[in-house]
Image (tube, rainbow, N blue to C red):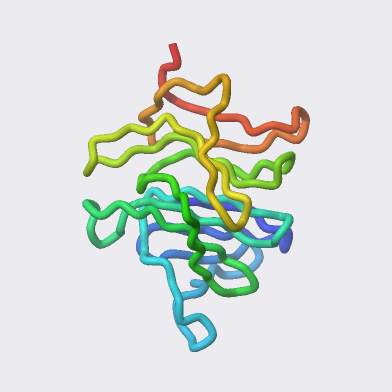
Length: 174
């Protein structure tokens, strides 16, 4: 499950079998974007997706994971939850399908940053970095990159004090 705090004071949870729900401590959680004629397009339910809130566009960006009904199907799709509906976003270049990648919104570059993850179907643990500007994915080639990680608990967050994205891991970096 990927969770993000929104400017509305609510938390958006995505992933798992219910796909998405929204709420806070003073109101009940409700499923979002799963029914109704105003939202005919829905991401498939998934596990291990990466996502972050983009405050510049007021959208939640969701990438990848694996199909909740078929764990052998890895997803390489990108979706945006904006103004109460899901929209699929296509890009000419995309990261290879993966689950459990670390992801965070980078306020300094106004982009979603994705690092690592794995795909058991291809046998690949990824150590690549991608950015998404709201329209297109671009593979980055930083001068320094974290070592290959294989922990589902790897997380990223933006640090306002340093104006940078920070990677947190429970794995051994050394």
